[in-house]
Structure formats: C-alpha cells, structure tokens
Image (cartoon, rainbow, N blue to C red; front, side):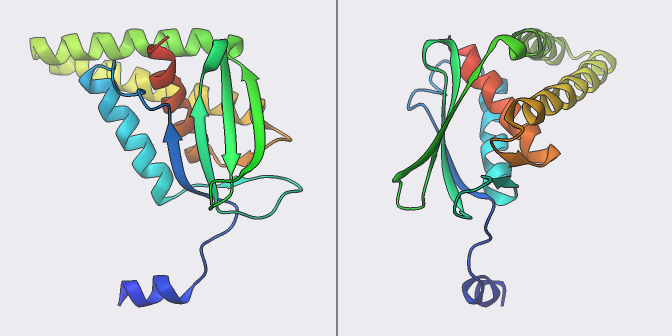
Length: 166
C-alpha cells in the first residue's frame, strides 16, 4: 500500500533527493565518524528541507565537498545537470568542527574503556555542538538556501566528516 501512495504522488519539491560526497569521503574516517556520516546521509535522503530561492523547486541532488579549504554546495537537478553552486568559507565552522572531532575521539576512548557515565556526558556535548553547528549552517546559508534545523544539523555532520579528511 505504501508503494502505491508513493508512486501516485510526485516527488516533494524544496528538498534533496540525493547527497553525494567526495568519492573518497569515507576512506579515511574512523568507524564512529563513518557511522555518523552514513546516518546523516540516510537521514537527509529520507527527510529534509532544502529550497533554493528563485530557482526551480527540486528535488535536488547535492554534491558536497571541501576543495581548497572552502565548503562547496554543488546543487544539481535530478538528471545531474548543474543548477547552482554555493561556496562558503570554512573559517566560521572551524572551532565547532575541531570541538566536534575532539568529542568524537573522546567518545571512542570512553566506549573502549566502558565508561558509561562519560559516554553519556560526551554524547550530550555532541548534541550541543550539533545544535550550534546547525544554527551556524542556517545563518551561513541564509538567502542562498532555506533549510530546516534537522537538515542543517545533518549537513553540519557531513562538514565534520569532510573536514576530518583535510
């Protein structure tokens, strides 16, 4: 029954249908960062808000990369033809990304040591950093792309994964 409903309705506009990262995005990630990256991509593909003011309504394909220290949103149509490009400086994100990566490393160590209370404390810190990163993402994309808080949070996770490779 769910398939029939899906087939009878056109794809929602103002959203991403697919997220593509650099071909080697996961090649040098720790298992924990890879799990975060994979979950963020799956969550984005399942539910997101991503609208381009003044452009056709989507859905869009997002190619995300960090060439030469800049965050690039290469936004494409469903047929993968280019639609828009947005380049953001990474400077405003660096402190949050660095703090996030420190927390991920601390989390892995706490899991290894079996320190449940420490794991919970670190996880709360990670959520707080994600929230701060989401707010920053919304601010930096203002006027270029409209995203909701959950989408911004997931995009911040992907920025952290991409940044880890630099």
